[in-house]
Length: 159
Image (cartoon, rainbow, N blue to C red; front, side):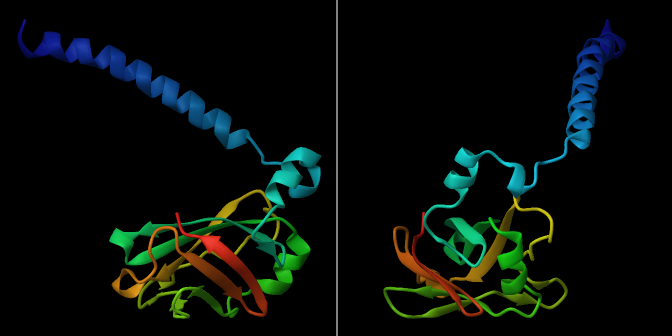
């Protein structure tokens, strides 16, 4: 039996798995997301609840890098409003409501700022921004305020 028998027993399931994966990837590659304006009213309402201003809605804030960074996820709900708010030069910060400490977006030497700037046509997509959390200042359950230029979104609870 030896090695050849084992190789044949592994090759067939591996080939089947590869075929399934390729089929799934090919079907997803052709799928186009619906723009925000064509989404159902129920989906738009769910996307447009609390923690929203300036054409964006904060989905969640969680810990990253062992609590030394905060990962903020947001969704664009109104492209026209978001265009006015987001540019590469827009000042971003997160304020810990318990201490008043301002948390900044890290600017890495080779990468740049750890954030995504929204695409002008993708209202459905979830974007991210990383904020420094020095000394793990912000704790789970703490409240923060997101400041984007002149826009403030208050009382976001850190998960």
